[in-house]
Amino acid sequence: MQLEVGTILEGKITGVLKFGAFVDLGEGKSGMVHISEVAQSYVNDIHEFCSEGQTVKVKIIGIAEDGKISLSMKRAEERPQRNAQPQRHDRQRAEAAAMKDKEEAPRPQRHVQKKPVKKEVFSPEDYEYAYEPRSKVTDAGFEDMLSKFKMSSEDRMSGLKTVDVKKRGRRK
Image 1: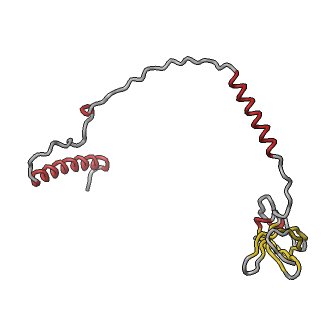
Image 2: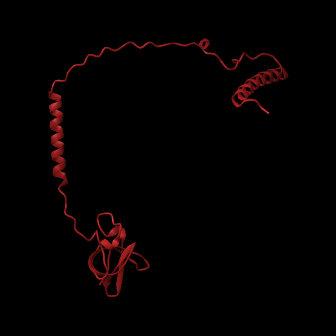
Image 3: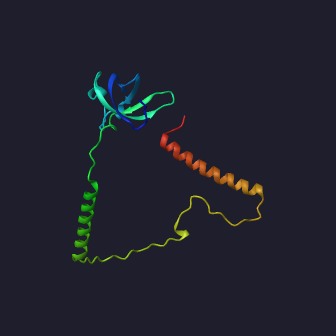
């Protein structure tokens, strides 16, 4: 017998492990059904669905180069086809009728009086700057600019140190 992917066969379960079941397909060939391919629903314990010696219908879903055969019990079962399209069309018709009724029904008019929004306009003078704003470039030398930076930096640092001392208490 030639084994091909998609063929549905009957076989006998020869072993059940927690990850799957081994099925004897006859003529010395066997394959494995992984736990995810046992049933349509979630399988927590494979022993609830399979037992040794049980005859099952399986579908070949893969044949590896080394000869291992992957089987599926859930794909071998023919599921009844659902009539989803008529329900969908019925639902679409119902939704369309509801929309038409909404369009025809008069809507109550709401008159909401909007309050004018007062926008406040701020100018740069309204803000207090923590640092001095940059002044225009002058012809001051590098040493003069560096000394001014050091002085302002030391002033800022001393202000931070006093705040830190107050928060922690006295330094030792």
